[in-house]
Length: 93
Image 1 (cartoon, helix red, strand yellow):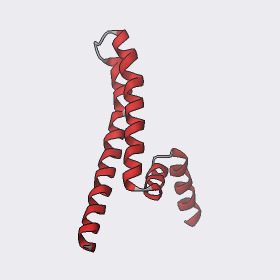
Image 2 (image 1 turned 60 degrees about the vertical axis):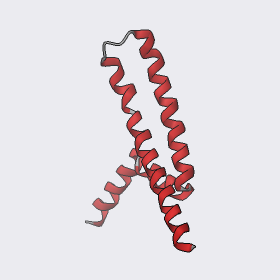
Image 3 (image 1 turned 180 degrees about the horizontal axis):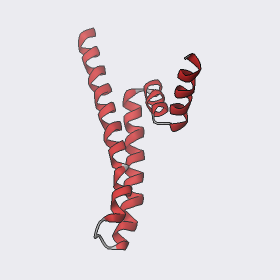
Image 4 (image 1 turned 60 degrees about the horizontal axis):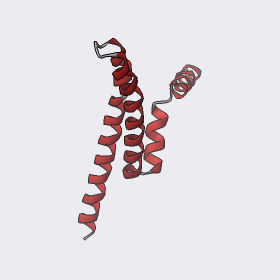
């Protein structure tokens, strides 16, 4: 029974990671949409709609993955953390 439970947990974890990655790809829609020949009124609906869907999908994935893993993943996306890592590497040399 424990191996079945472990398999189920890994499936939900993988599904959660997949949903998070897909939600991040949805953030490209607001960047690309202004450059398409779509009417302006439609663009005005697509951009906020995709942002809302991306956020909802991120948090659904975070629920499946777990709080700790989601926070760790989100910290990787924070540009402030990128700069701190570079500064610590510079100080070590």
